[in-house]
Image (cartoon, rainbow, N blue to C red; front, side, top):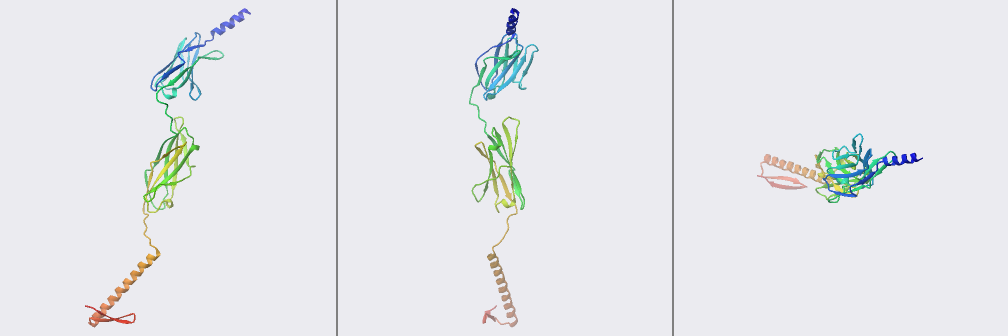
Length: 303
């Protein structure tokens, strides 16, 4: 029985426990190098570093096996490294960014559990962390386009959103011409196509607007603006200019057409009448030639 108690005590002593971390809080600045120290009892085999970020997510940052001298960091970036011995472990982070803020815990993996130190809170000093804008940019293409009669055109509106889902995005269009103010013109938003970018939280989206010839105002060049609203932020695009070709047609009202034809006929009648008078005067040789007009004779003196 004594041997059993002694064996249990010996086993408990062999379990390494994280002794302490260098400080409970450590301040740093963006671009600096951060070194976190941890002292442990002898007999430890595997040391680990965990980070509890500002979103309360626990992440394994690095691990090191003292016996095999095998080290592993969570990220493949060179700015993360770990150095460990039988009594200490140092986690180094170079070129600190805002994402490095959080609480770091040094731990020792035992046979049945993991023993952690009290943790070190890392505070990144400087200006407050910039909040990502939900809407990054709005770009339209093409810049201008020439349209022929009976043609249809497609306008593209590209934009980037950050930390904002497609459900909170809306798109509308504005049309501006030379003879009118900017008019709001709504369009359906079901044609928004989005895909996630490599950077976490960012999404690239495209909205296409197809216009037919009948939708253009006659005889006017127009500019169409894409207006995007994402999570409460609204940005307007650069605009696409529409040049309309071969749209000028000359048409007259019916009354005006009849009046023109009337003047033409009257002119021809007068010409024929004068031409007849001239020929008659040449045949008779008289300077005065009677012409019957509406039942009366008119004497025209022709030279």
